Amino acid sequence: MRVLVIEDDRETAQFLVKALKESGHGADTTADGESGLEMASEGGYDVLIIDRMLPKRDGLSIVETLRGNGDRTPVLILSALGSVDDRVKGLRSGGDDYLTKPYAFSELLARVEALGRRLEPETQVTRYVVGDLSLDRLSHKVTRGGATVPLQAREFRLLEYLMRHAGQVVTRTMLLEHVWDYHFDPQTNVIDVHISRLRSKIDKGFPKPLLHTVRGAGYVVRDGDA
Image (cartoon, rainbow, N blue to C red):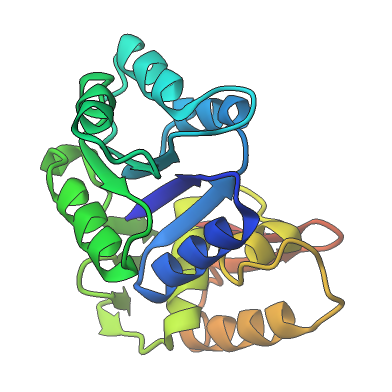
C-alpha cells in the first residue's frame, strides 16, 4: 500500500514513515494541512493518516474537504483528544478510524492494513508490467520473460517505485526520499550501487534493456530505447 502521513511533529512523522516502509508499504509525509490536502487530492494513496491538530488547516477540515470532493480514500485520524465526543466528531467528519495518542505502532499498522483491505479490488494496483517485466506487490514476485528475478527488499522497493512511474524520469532526490527516506543528497553512491545491481538482474541476458539512465536527470523504466 501507499500511505500518506500528514503529521506536523517531525520526529513522529519520520518514525511512522520509516516503520511503514520497513513493514513493506510505501509512505510519504507532509507537515501542514494545506500541503496535506493538496497531496491527498492528487490521489495515488491507499490510506491517509491524518493528525487532527495541524498548522494552516486542521485534520478534520482536510477530511471534510476530501469527502466533499468525492474522495473516498480511507482515513485514520490521530489525535491526543480521546473523549467520546472527540472520537464521534472525527468519525462524523468522514474519518474511517480514530486512534488516540499515545499508541503502539503495531496497533496503528493493523488499523492501516485493515483500512487498506476495505478498498474495492479494482482500485488497488497490485501488479505493474513494463514489456515482459512484471512486479507483483502482493506476492513480492518479479519476473522477466516468465523467469523469476530474485530481488532483495531494497531492490524490490526501488524497482516498484520505478515501475510505478514507468515512462517518467525519476530523479535521485525522488529515490532518496521515497525509497531510502533521505530528504537530501548526502553525496553517497548508494543509488548507483543499487541501480547497477538491479540492472544486472532485470536486464542482463535480455536483448532489450528496460532500465535506462538519463544523464543529468535520473532513471527511467520503459519499454523502448534510451
